[in-house]
Image (cartoon, rainbow, N blue to C red):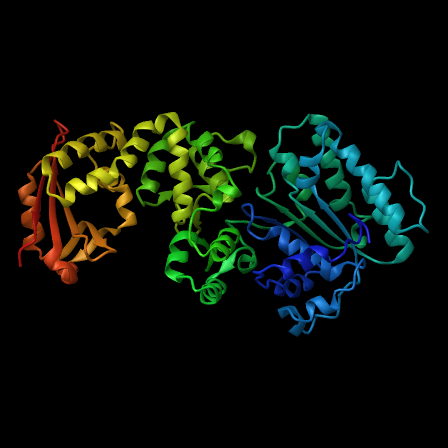
Length: 524
């Protein structure tokens, strides 16, 4: 059993010994059908801590000749699959964690030389009867083992993209490309590799790297390739955990759901595990990612990034064209590039059918809040969000003049000169101005009510808080907005709250940009 060649099953054992283990072993059955086919090379890109490495550990324990894993797998789901014993511990496995190796290297310029040196030693120890030369490439050593033993390899490379994401010298990067090319674009070596599994945060780069890895079928946040259920927790798995740990499913759903990949809703696994173990839903994302990643890119404000971010934080969806992003951090030049990159990092969810993006859940929304606090061009927006508690208090207490003044400031801050007079801009301003109200209310825009749609409805989570119904007008007056609420019977949507319902009419003047507000308690 080596470090890189034919590793053991210790990592899987450790996972099984943990308090929480969600069985994803059926992935073995899925990929077993791909062995020695034209689809035998797959590359999976997902955000950090979405289960990529865990799947790799399952594969190493199952395929590696360096261990006997029958007893381990006998209690997992894959044991009931007819293919279970067919490939169990029958392959040579070559496993490289590029991320871990790169981060632990003292001299980044020597990272490939050090890797070759360690692989050479591992090959010698694992196959003492085979003669290797220090000048042999990794591909040459794999080929020699296959020729001598007639045993194929499974190749597992974790964080293959670390050298793509890091700023490394051109000669080191060129050497890395040569390594990939020798392993996966070598016709002579092809019979020796039964399957290859690469993981990364970013999909395969569409220029230099793609030419070396175009044999790989990709599973991404945009195109899951039928693998969506294995990376992240499914709704059924989350419900089981909630029952076991006596946690409220709806609360977990609000905090960690929102990644709609193909037809499956996927939850952040790392955060779910933390929430279960601590018996508390909270933001655990900051352990695995940094809001600085978001902040650095929204500061650039390519062709409307700021406006789009404001809309998303206000709960809206934005249109993104993900087709032109080249999966390279050196080639982020447009708003679409910025948001496509953030989709792959898990900060945004993408709906392939509509091409619309949104912030997926409460946890990630908090990361966006942190990001705009340190992005200089968002300072006033961050301040407005900070003051939203006081605005809600003023509204609940009927302070209409103070509310109108706050909306004057909010509307200007969230609007450009081009879109100030759009009603959608005013709606976004109001949602942001009342941002923290979401902790106490369910906020619904275009709420079906009576004989039409109320502009914004605030449904309280605590029955002691008043429900709030807001109607917007332009170049009219706030009293007209109140009359429309009554004439169209919008309060009908609040039948359970009629004893504690506030009607809010807001009017703004396109020329003076002054807002008028009327707040009154609903009378039956």
